[in-house]
Image (cartoon, rainbow, N blue to C red; front, side, top):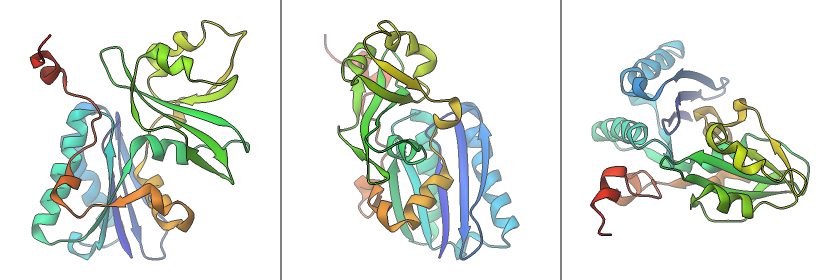
Length: 233
């Protein structure tokens, strides 16, 4: 199996390639504004490293969001361009789930993934550690910082770039709850993590097959700023 994986939802653009029995190769680039310029460059570089052509790729993986509206559009536009040439198997994953999948913790631990949704809100999902894997205990959604804080148990782990803005919201009552703030290295989804989950039978359910036109639309979970401004008061 030859797999190409694209993750464009965060400030860290990542592209990964799995060529049969070879180890997974990944290339990254930081900065939202550079995604459109660097996406094809990284893909071309990976294919050259493995001496492959794009037409030899039989499976595509893509991060569906939530995250940057522009970044997600770049990823899906690129994927649709590839598929216009020839249809391939495609699978998509939530960025929240992929971040969680890359974090290890003790059995029974509680984890909150918190991504900056802009305009004072947070993309979030909560998990519990069971049988060496994170089991989601909530649906993905958009919450206010105080709503996230209210849903945390007495002890929990938090990860995601929303901590840059809202960490103080979760530290206001340190005597009541014990919160482990995970390092920035755990904050972002990666294309390589998607490949790892796809190849791991126990976590294959984290990636959903994309078969219908409606599947090739990013999962924003909220309206854009322009769309929100158009809403009636």
